[in-house]
Amino acid sequence: MIRNAAVAGQFYPAWPDELREMIKYFSPDQATKIDAVGAVCPHAGYVYSGPVAGEVISRINLTDTVIILGPNHRGLGKPFSIMTEGSWKTPLGEVRIDSELAEAILKTSTNIEEDSLAHRHEHSLEVQVPFLQYFKPDIRIVPIVLSLANPSVYKEIGKAIAAAEKEAGIEAVILASSDMTHYEPHESAKAKDKKAIEAILNLDADELIKRIAKYDISMCGYAPVVALITAAIELGAGKAELVRYQTSGDTSGDYSSVVGYAGIIIGK
Image 1 (tube, rainbow, N blue to C red):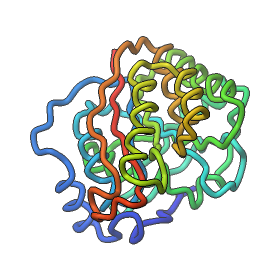
Image 2 (image 1 turned 120 degrees about the horizontal axis):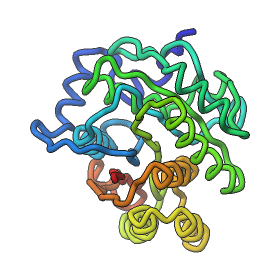
Image 3 (image 1 turned 135 degrees about the horizontal axis):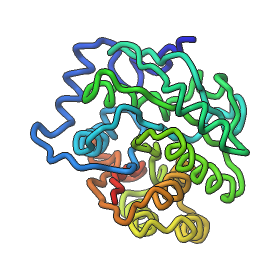
Image 4 (image 1 turned 180 degrees about the vertical axis):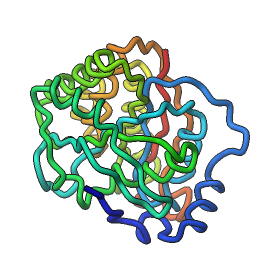
């Protein structure tokens, strides 16, 4: 099965040369690369979140496989869905799904189900793929979409991902796709996002969940981030670094209503 690009020409250029040039523009030429267990990366249109995504992914020593966790914006398909076979097509070519690791995660988790419908139109995972292709053309992915649920579900999924990696003997970077605060004034968004970022940097999933509720932080991908933090701790992570933060206002010049973007790398 080939999952065709759904948002090429909308969130990012549909022409390969233009897409490569945009990614190159957003990615530092000589970024110091580090080994990472995982990362948090935004998923808006490249003109807005591309600078953050470029700084994050350009700094990671990419493994052969990247697990991409994203929120379900459209409500289609199974609530916790994985694709275990086939490939994803973007203007830069096709990316194969790592069936071995995907099957291991599906087998290990009590919540994840096989489903392609949830992925068909979802942009949160798709926008990460061209960046991964740019830096590692032969990259493989494991795409997982998460819907709203009790946080215990996200933790179970995180633990299952870590257990599956260990069982399969496959080391994979885990990429949690999330934007931060949505459609608030710039200073308000920054203040709220700072509180969420602090919890992520402390690798404290419970505190992140508390702060999202307490401060009404409209972080669309907190579920993938909770799963990431849980998996990362199981895999021996002990530190996290904020690579870059900005809002859509830094691109548009309109600071009255912005979306926040944070790029964070988690390592051992």
